[in-house]
Length: 385
Image (cartoon, rainbow, N blue to C red; front, side, top):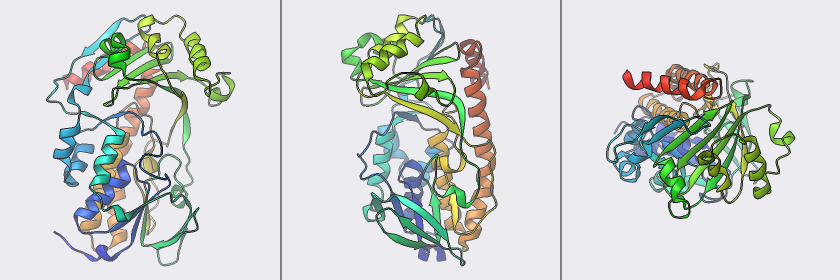
């Protein structure tokens, strides 16, 4: 095991999502202690979201560095790579059936992945219910962290793993996320195999994209038997407020959403009509493709805090975990903490810019004209490479 002076530095990670936890775990594996501050009250205080596909060159590589790849493979769903692509009439453009025991990008539920990481980290280093108010730079490169609950910490390095609207990003850049032009409404069909076997059979074991008219109905089977559904729209930023849809009244909201898909095939609209439980509207934001900043001692960004992008390259969590691995290994390899961070940032910029451009291009394609045939053509080109 390599040892260096960074073992004695106090490193704070803001955010206990997959990126922050991966960073804490890999540093722990190398004998470097961290403290993780998370604003959520507990690991189960909110719904953890849908299923994630974990890529070999990024997320899986990070899990290997964390010593968790075999445990991940035991939990992952390789059959989750099934993919179906249709248009609003129900015409099928792609119908890919994955090998249940092999594949490059198996699925895992976000909550399951987070649990895997949490179980591998010294629990005393994670502080739940700590909402960061402010990080104040000091003259010596340290930062003074102030939390809602009155706690104050002084650290040698603060790592922002706190997502799209990071409180720390302003220390490095004035750039803020901008609206992509896409809003999505999240719904769930619970216990789909038992309660709606016809939807389960139609969707298969992975993802379904139905794309037409600058809109989409997207289905994604989760490991807990729920089908996560997204109704997606190219709309103005204030659409959630101006649409007149009462998202806090699920049955009325579903009725009004269905009117927006009035000429779509029933095999697709049943994804909305069969949903139960809360309905959550989400605006999709992004940071500029290729964002960089001038390095400053004692602070850096990983994941969405550094390179927020739409989900249409499937790279978000994978890049957060890859960032974590690159930063952790750089800290282990360098005697100087500031040099370690700078080396990480210079390595991170190119690969994240490439993914951000792909994500932006894919969003434009999926919600543009003739989306289904164009996406089919793009995916066929990808498979032919």
